[in-house]
Length: 322
Ligand SMILES: [Zn+2]
Ligand SMILES: [Zn+2]
Image 1 (cartoon, protein in one colour):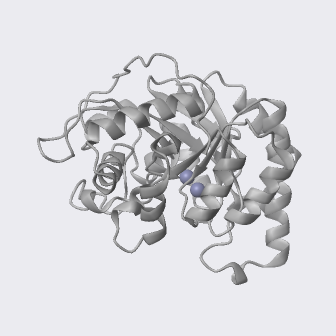
Image 2: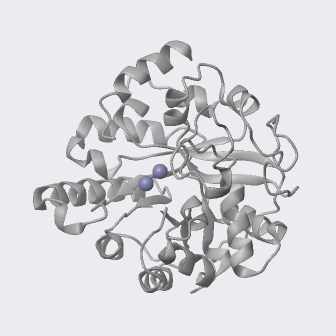
Protein backbone atom coordinates (compact mmCIF):
# COMPACT_ATOMS: atom_id res chain seq x y z
CA UNK A 1 0.00 0.00 0.00
CA UNK A 2 2.77 2.39 1.01
CA UNK A 3 4.51 2.39 -2.38
CA UNK A 4 1.23 2.80 -4.16
CA UNK A 5 0.17 5.72 -2.02
CA UNK A 6 3.50 7.41 -2.71
CA UNK A 7 3.14 6.73 -6.41
CA UNK A 8 -0.42 8.05 -6.26
CA UNK A 9 0.81 11.09 -4.39
CA UNK A 10 3.20 11.98 -7.21
CA UNK A 11 0.43 11.64 -9.74
CA UNK A 12 -1.96 13.67 -7.63
CA UNK A 13 0.27 16.70 -7.90
CA UNK A 14 -0.90 16.97 -11.51
CA UNK A 15 -4.51 16.89 -10.51
CA UNK A 16 -6.61 20.02 -11.16
CA UNK A 17 -7.53 20.68 -8.29
CA UNK A 18 -41.98 11.97 -7.33
CA UNK A 19 -42.36 8.59 -7.68
CA UNK A 20 -41.32 6.10 -5.08
CA UNK A 21 -38.28 4.03 -6.05
CA UNK A 22 -39.50 0.66 -7.27
CA UNK A 23 -36.76 -1.64 -6.01
CA UNK A 24 -37.87 -3.04 -2.65
CA UNK A 25 -35.08 -2.61 -0.12
CA UNK A 26 -33.77 -5.94 1.14
CA UNK A 27 -33.49 -6.51 4.89
CA UNK A 28 -30.69 -4.33 6.17
CA UNK A 29 -27.89 -6.16 7.88
CA UNK A 30 -25.88 -3.78 10.04
CA UNK A 31 -22.23 -3.76 9.04
CA UNK A 32 -19.98 -2.47 11.79
CA UNK A 33 -16.45 -3.38 10.81
CA UNK A 34 -14.78 -0.23 12.15
CA UNK A 35 -13.24 0.46 15.51
CA UNK A 36 -13.58 4.14 16.30
CA UNK A 37 -12.14 6.32 19.00
CA UNK A 38 -14.27 9.45 19.31
CA UNK A 39 -15.05 10.92 22.70
CA UNK A 40 -18.62 11.51 24.00
CA UNK A 41 -20.45 14.52 22.53
CA UNK A 42 -18.13 14.96 19.58
CA UNK A 43 -20.86 13.76 17.21
CA UNK A 44 -24.65 13.78 17.24
CA UNK A 45 -25.50 10.52 19.03
CA UNK A 46 -27.21 7.60 17.31
CA UNK A 47 -26.85 3.85 17.18
CA UNK A 48 -28.29 3.58 13.66
CA UNK A 49 -25.50 2.52 11.27
CA UNK A 50 -24.30 5.31 8.97
CA UNK A 51 -22.82 4.64 5.54
CA UNK A 52 -21.38 7.64 3.70
CA UNK A 53 -22.84 7.45 0.19
CA UNK A 54 -20.08 9.49 -1.48
CA UNK A 55 -16.49 10.29 -0.57
CA UNK A 56 -12.95 10.06 -1.96
CA UNK A 57 -10.79 7.80 0.18
CA UNK A 58 -7.85 8.02 -2.22
CA UNK A 59 -7.72 11.84 -1.94
CA UNK A 60 -8.14 11.60 1.81
CA UNK A 61 -5.31 9.11 2.31
CA UNK A 62 -2.95 11.09 0.09
CA UNK A 63 -3.87 14.44 1.65
CA UNK A 64 -3.42 13.05 5.16
CA UNK A 65 -0.27 11.14 4.23
CA UNK A 66 -1.87 8.00 5.63
CA UNK A 67 0.10 4.95 4.56
CA UNK A 68 -1.88 2.28 6.40
CA UNK A 69 -5.27 0.75 5.78
CA UNK A 70 -8.50 2.75 5.74
CA UNK A 71 -9.56 0.90 8.92
CA UNK A 72 -6.40 2.11 10.67
CA UNK A 73 -7.08 5.65 9.42
CA UNK A 74 -10.61 5.46 10.87
CA UNK A 75 -9.23 4.32 14.19
CA UNK A 76 -6.59 7.04 14.30
CA UNK A 77 -9.09 9.85 13.62
CA UNK A 78 -12.24 11.02 15.35
CA UNK A 79 -15.01 8.97 13.72
CA UNK A 80 -18.49 8.46 15.19
CA UNK A 81 -19.21 5.08 16.78
CA UNK A 82 -21.96 4.19 14.29
CA UNK A 83 -19.77 4.75 11.21
CA UNK A 84 -20.33 1.65 9.09
CA UNK A 85 -18.68 2.29 5.76
CA UNK A 86 -18.62 4.35 2.62
CA UNK A 87 -18.78 4.43 -1.17
CA UNK A 88 -15.46 5.81 -2.39
CA UNK A 89 -15.50 7.51 -5.79
CA UNK A 90 -12.34 7.16 -7.86
CA UNK A 91 -12.52 9.84 -10.51
CA UNK A 92 -8.98 10.76 -11.60
CA UNK A 93 -6.86 8.71 -13.99
CA UNK A 94 -4.13 7.96 -11.37
CA UNK A 95 -6.84 6.31 -9.26
CA UNK A 96 -7.48 3.44 -11.64
CA UNK A 97 -4.41 3.34 -13.91
CA UNK A 98 -1.19 1.36 -13.32
CA UNK A 99 -0.04 1.23 -9.65
CA UNK A 100 -3.36 2.55 -8.46
CA UNK A 101 -4.55 1.92 -4.92
CA UNK A 102 -8.22 1.03 -5.49
CA UNK A 103 -7.75 -2.74 -5.21
CA UNK A 104 -6.15 -2.38 -1.77
CA UNK A 105 -8.84 0.05 -0.63
CA UNK A 106 -11.72 -2.13 -1.85
CA UNK A 107 -10.27 -5.18 -0.14
CA UNK A 108 -11.33 -3.68 3.17
CA UNK A 109 -14.68 -4.40 4.82
CA UNK A 110 -17.22 -1.60 4.65
CA UNK A 111 -15.70 0.08 1.58
CA UNK A 112 -17.29 0.03 -1.86
CA UNK A 113 -16.21 1.84 -5.02
CA UNK A 114 -17.41 3.84 -8.01
CA UNK A 115 -15.24 4.67 -11.02
CA UNK A 116 -15.65 7.43 -13.58
CA UNK A 117 -13.84 10.41 -15.08
CA UNK A 118 -14.62 13.71 -13.34
CA UNK A 119 -15.68 16.52 -15.72
CA UNK A 120 -12.62 18.56 -14.64
CA UNK A 121 -10.54 15.98 -16.52
CA UNK A 122 -12.92 15.57 -19.45
CA UNK A 123 -10.39 16.54 -22.11
CA UNK A 124 -8.27 13.53 -21.07
CA UNK A 125 -10.97 11.01 -21.96
CA UNK A 126 -9.64 8.51 -24.50
CA UNK A 127 -9.70 4.79 -25.30
CA UNK A 128 -7.05 3.90 -22.71
CA UNK A 129 -8.96 5.63 -19.95
CA UNK A 130 -12.19 4.01 -21.08
CA UNK A 131 -10.58 0.56 -21.01
CA UNK A 132 -9.13 1.19 -17.54
CA UNK A 133 -12.52 2.33 -16.28
CA UNK A 134 -14.25 -0.73 -17.72
CA UNK A 135 -11.68 -2.98 -16.04
CA UNK A 136 -12.04 -1.18 -12.68
CA UNK A 137 -15.83 -1.42 -12.93
CA UNK A 138 -15.58 -5.20 -13.17
CA UNK A 139 -14.34 -5.25 -9.55
CA UNK A 140 -16.91 -7.15 -7.42
CA UNK A 141 -17.20 -4.19 -5.02
CA UNK A 142 -17.79 -1.58 -7.73
CA UNK A 143 -21.36 -0.39 -7.15
CA UNK A 144 -21.62 2.44 -9.72
CA UNK A 145 -20.00 4.39 -12.56
CA UNK A 146 -18.96 7.88 -11.51
CA UNK A 147 -18.59 10.53 -10.67
CA UNK A 148 -19.09 11.79 -14.20
CA UNK A 149 -21.03 14.69 -15.69
CA UNK A 150 -20.63 18.42 -16.25
CA UNK A 151 -19.14 21.25 -14.20
CA UNK A 152 -19.68 24.85 -15.24
CA UNK A 153 -18.48 26.14 -11.88
CA UNK A 154 -20.23 28.96 -10.14
CA UNK A 155 -20.35 31.07 -13.24
CA UNK A 156 -21.57 29.37 -16.39
CA UNK A 157 -20.22 32.19 -18.57
CA UNK A 158 -16.62 31.47 -17.54
CA UNK A 159 -16.65 27.93 -18.94
CA UNK A 160 -15.27 27.99 -22.47
CA UNK A 161 -17.42 26.44 -25.23
CA UNK A 162 -14.74 23.87 -26.23
CA UNK A 163 -14.41 22.82 -22.58
CA UNK A 164 -18.18 22.36 -22.35
CA UNK A 165 -18.08 20.31 -25.56
CA UNK A 166 -15.30 18.07 -24.15
CA UNK A 167 -17.27 17.56 -20.94
CA UNK A 168 -20.41 16.61 -22.84
CA UNK A 169 -18.52 14.16 -25.06
CA UNK A 170 -16.82 12.42 -22.12
CA UNK A 171 -20.13 12.32 -20.25
CA UNK A 172 -22.06 10.74 -23.12
CA UNK A 173 -19.29 8.18 -23.80
CA UNK A 174 -19.28 7.15 -20.13
CA UNK A 175 -23.07 6.90 -20.01
CA UNK A 176 -22.92 4.47 -22.95
CA UNK A 177 -20.36 2.27 -21.22
CA UNK A 178 -22.11 2.39 -17.84
CA UNK A 179 -25.42 1.40 -19.45
CA UNK A 180 -23.72 -1.44 -21.32
CA UNK A 181 -22.31 -2.71 -17.99
CA UNK A 182 -25.62 -1.98 -16.22
CA UNK A 183 -23.95 0.22 -13.60
CA UNK A 184 -25.89 2.88 -11.67
CA UNK A 185 -24.64 6.46 -12.24
CA UNK A 186 -23.03 8.97 -9.88
CA UNK A 187 -23.56 12.39 -11.46
CA UNK A 188 -21.58 15.57 -10.82
CA UNK A 189 -23.43 18.53 -12.28
CA UNK A 190 -22.32 21.71 -10.49
CA UNK A 191 -23.82 24.76 -12.19
CA UNK A 192 -24.89 22.52 -15.08
CA UNK A 193 -27.90 20.70 -13.64
CA UNK A 194 -30.23 21.48 -16.54
CA UNK A 195 -27.72 20.44 -19.24
CA UNK A 196 -26.85 17.26 -17.32
CA UNK A 197 -30.56 16.44 -17.14
CA UNK A 198 -31.02 17.00 -20.90
CA UNK A 199 -28.20 14.55 -21.64
CA UNK A 200 -29.53 11.99 -19.16
CA UNK A 201 -33.05 12.29 -20.57
CA UNK A 202 -31.82 11.64 -24.10
CA UNK A 203 -29.63 8.65 -23.26
CA UNK A 204 -30.80 6.84 -20.16
CA UNK A 205 -33.81 4.61 -19.40
CA UNK A 206 -36.18 6.17 -16.88
CA UNK A 207 -35.77 3.39 -14.32
CA UNK A 208 -31.99 3.67 -14.13
CA UNK A 209 -30.56 4.31 -10.64
CA UNK A 210 -28.89 7.72 -10.43
CA UNK A 211 -27.23 9.53 -7.52
CA UNK A 212 -27.10 13.26 -8.39
CA UNK A 213 -24.31 13.98 -5.97
CA UNK A 214 -23.62 17.23 -4.04
CA UNK A 215 -26.73 18.83 -5.47
CA UNK A 216 -26.64 22.63 -5.30
CA UNK A 217 -29.18 23.45 -8.02
CA UNK A 218 -32.74 24.66 -7.62
CA UNK A 219 -35.57 22.68 -6.06
CA UNK A 220 -37.63 22.98 -9.26
CA UNK A 221 -34.94 21.31 -11.41
CA UNK A 222 -34.48 18.58 -8.77
CA UNK A 223 -38.21 17.97 -8.80
CA UNK A 224 -38.39 17.77 -12.61
CA UNK A 225 -35.49 15.33 -12.70
CA UNK A 226 -36.93 13.10 -9.96
CA UNK A 227 -40.30 12.97 -11.71
CA UNK A 228 -38.60 11.81 -14.89
CA UNK A 229 -36.25 9.36 -13.15
CA UNK A 230 -38.14 7.53 -10.36
CA UNK A 231 -34.90 5.95 -9.10
CA UNK A 232 -32.90 9.18 -8.87
CA UNK A 233 -31.58 10.25 -5.46
CA UNK A 234 -30.41 13.75 -4.56
CA UNK A 235 -27.11 13.97 -2.66
CA UNK A 236 -26.96 16.42 0.26
CA UNK A 237 -23.53 17.32 1.66
CA UNK A 238 -22.26 19.28 4.65
CA UNK A 239 -23.12 22.47 2.72
CA UNK A 240 -26.60 22.20 4.24
CA UNK A 241 -25.10 23.04 7.65
CA UNK A 242 -24.14 26.55 6.44
CA UNK A 243 -26.68 29.40 6.62
CA UNK A 244 -25.64 30.68 3.21
CA UNK A 245 -26.62 27.50 1.32
CA UNK A 246 -30.26 28.47 0.81
CA UNK A 247 -30.82 26.28 -2.29
CA UNK A 248 -29.47 23.21 -0.53
CA UNK A 249 -31.60 23.90 2.54
CA UNK A 250 -34.72 24.27 0.42
CA UNK A 251 -34.02 20.93 -1.27
CA UNK A 252 -33.30 19.29 2.12
CA UNK A 253 -36.66 20.59 3.39
CA UNK A 254 -38.82 19.72 0.39
CA UNK A 255 -37.30 16.59 -1.14
CA UNK A 256 -39.05 13.34 -0.14
CA UNK A 257 -36.85 11.75 2.51
CA UNK A 258 -36.73 8.49 0.57
CA UNK A 259 -35.04 10.31 -2.35
CA UNK A 260 -32.17 11.89 -0.37
CA UNK A 261 -28.68 10.48 0.10
CA UNK A 262 -26.50 12.00 2.82
CA UNK A 263 -22.94 12.24 1.60
CA UNK A 264 -19.75 13.91 2.79
CA UNK A 265 -17.77 14.29 -0.46
CA UNK A 266 -14.82 13.97 1.96
CA UNK A 267 -12.19 15.34 2.10
CA UNK A 268 -14.21 18.36 0.89
CA UNK A 269 -17.27 20.06 2.41
CA UNK A 270 -16.48 19.88 6.12
CA UNK A 271 -19.79 20.43 7.96
CA UNK A 272 -20.06 23.47 10.22
CA UNK A 273 -20.64 21.35 13.33
CA UNK A 274 -17.38 19.48 12.68
CA UNK A 275 -15.25 22.63 12.50
CA UNK A 276 -13.53 21.90 15.83
CA UNK A 277 -12.99 18.22 15.11
CA UNK A 278 -9.73 16.83 13.81
CA UNK A 279 -7.71 20.00 14.24
CA UNK A 280 -4.64 18.35 12.69
CA UNK A 281 -6.44 18.67 9.36
CA UNK A 282 -8.75 21.64 9.92
CA UNK A 283 -10.02 21.80 6.35
CA UNK A 284 -10.58 18.07 5.71
CA UNK A 285 -13.86 16.29 6.24
CA UNK A 286 -13.86 12.59 6.99
CA UNK A 287 -16.59 10.16 5.91
CA UNK A 288 -18.01 9.99 9.44
CA UNK A 289 -18.86 13.69 9.47
CA UNK A 290 -22.00 13.04 7.43
CA UNK A 291 -23.70 12.67 10.80
CA UNK A 292 -23.75 16.47 11.10
CA UNK A 293 -25.48 16.65 7.73
CA UNK A 294 -28.06 14.03 8.75
CA UNK A 295 -28.58 15.90 12.02
CA UNK A 296 -29.22 19.19 10.19
CA UNK A 297 -31.74 17.48 7.89
CA UNK A 298 -33.45 16.06 11.00
CA UNK A 299 -33.61 19.57 12.50
CA UNK A 300 -34.94 21.17 9.30
CA UNK A 301 -37.65 18.50 8.97
CA UNK A 302 -38.42 18.24 12.70
CA UNK A 303 -37.54 14.54 12.80
CA UNK A 304 -35.29 12.52 15.07
CA UNK A 305 -31.75 11.79 13.93
CA UNK A 306 -32.53 8.06 14.23
CA UNK A 307 -35.47 8.42 11.83
CA UNK A 308 -33.33 10.23 9.25
CA UNK A 309 -30.45 7.77 9.55
CA UNK A 310 -32.78 4.77 9.27
CA UNK A 311 -34.20 6.14 6.01
CA UNK A 312 -30.71 7.04 4.74
CA UNK A 313 -29.55 3.50 5.38
CA UNK A 314 -32.48 2.22 3.27
CA UNK A 315 -31.71 4.73 0.53
CA UNK A 316 -28.09 3.56 0.33
CA UNK A 317 -29.48 0.06 -0.09
CA UNK A 318 -31.95 1.23 -2.76
CA UNK A 319 -29.31 3.10 -4.75
CA UNK A 320 -26.23 0.93 -4.33
CA UNK A 321 -27.62 -2.45 -3.24
CA UNK A 322 -25.40 -2.47 -0.12
ZN1 LIG B 1 -18.41 16.01 -7.49
ZN1 LIG C 1 -17.06 13.76 -5.13
